[in-house]
Length: 84
Image (cartoon, rainbow, N blue to C red; front, side, top):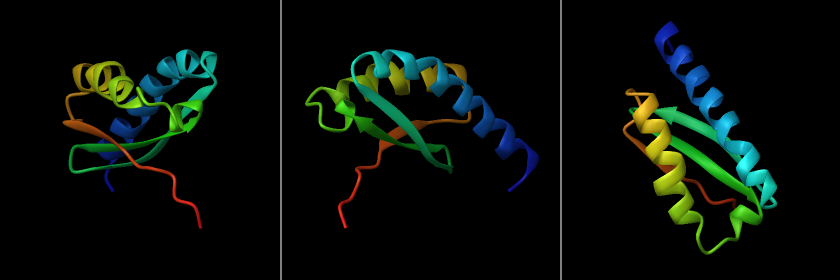
């Protein structure tokens, strides 16, 4: 990983921190999982992980914001929590 990668990840995490309070207010949260090849992977936590409208939050709140502010990100996808 190069310097630009880590700078991009720092920008992503900064933007996620700005989104996080809105999710926490509704009993949820968000977790950065990975960023690779223009794709940001996140995981919803708490109430957000089970919310039927999380796909709308993902597309129109998180992805829209991140892609507009960080051109290196082309897409944001959710990684579901697995139960082992």
